[in-house]
Image: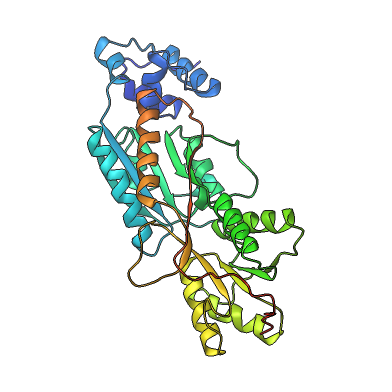
Length: 355
């Protein structure tokens, strides 16, 4: 048994002895059920060793909230239009609910050990934020690091890269791009298309989800899935352009394309145009967009998701976790919508469209 402190021990001393946060000590003192067994045992052991006697103020600590939600954008070069839409929805819901929002960016290595990761300052300042919303591109090691220090957080599931599946439906928001691409594929099949291609780098989970939806619908209809699923360029537009060139060089039949993003779709359209083919007269084309409203600069038919609503749902899930003292919540799924804007047309019976 460890030596008892001669001075009156504080809650901070207990936290240091148990190697946990002050918040975790507070939750143990207040008998919250969201502390795992091992952490609870460490805290209780430290309390006994130090002879700690909690006072009313210390016990009330665990019931107080900062009313701050933290938003961490991971592994992004900057804040792009999608992040801006998510941020808008998150900030809007937080403001309506009487919560403040703190924002931070963070970069980390995807192959580092979880215990070696340097966490952002927003996470190191324990108790600053009641719950974290984790967006950007995230990997299993980072989530393991958050779990190991008993942080309350929610994630945008579409952008999490996992080596193996985590427990489904837990503290995350997902937009249904898999279902949206299955719907878009069925729509093209209804228009008479059979030679439908998917273009998108399936090493990235968001492109893989969309490819899975495409494959599902093709298989259900007895059609052969065809895809260019290895990135030929880092830039989405260039990748779409290069993918069309590969298909054209092989002289493979193609009457419709599902692009994994609007950037890929723009590259596909330009690549087709350079080869004397026009959308939709020669090839029907569907992309993906993070907003549903009609774009004034593009008439691209797209699988669309309301990214502002995704942000709202992330904030709602975070605040619900806060107000339920960290209770695990089921996954929230935001639907997608196929918005038809004029880049698809029925296939004429005599057209084979071999490029």
